[in-house]
Length: 72
Image 1 (cartoon, rainbow, N blue to C red):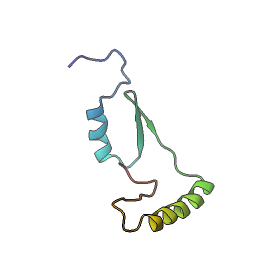
Image 2: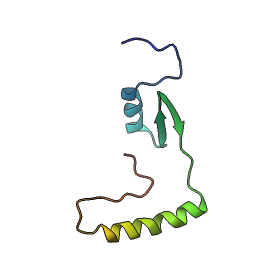
Image 3: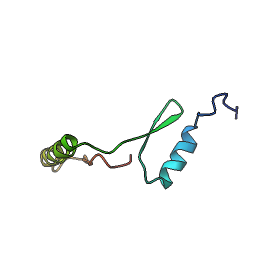
Image 4: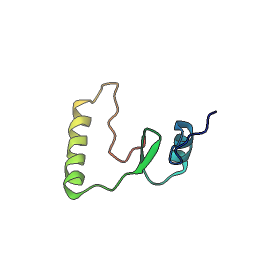
């Protein structure tokens, strides 16, 4: 393995290992991580309505609908 010259770089493997233990959601982009903030009022009002609409429309399909807090 070649060491990175950028001390902020995190390998995908290290990121995924840390995500398994973290209670905070992070975004991983180009070797760097960014903590994700909580939702705002409008988002927290619209998201459940959209979830319910999608869940209803996809009933019986081979799909899953998740709320925004799901770590994928």
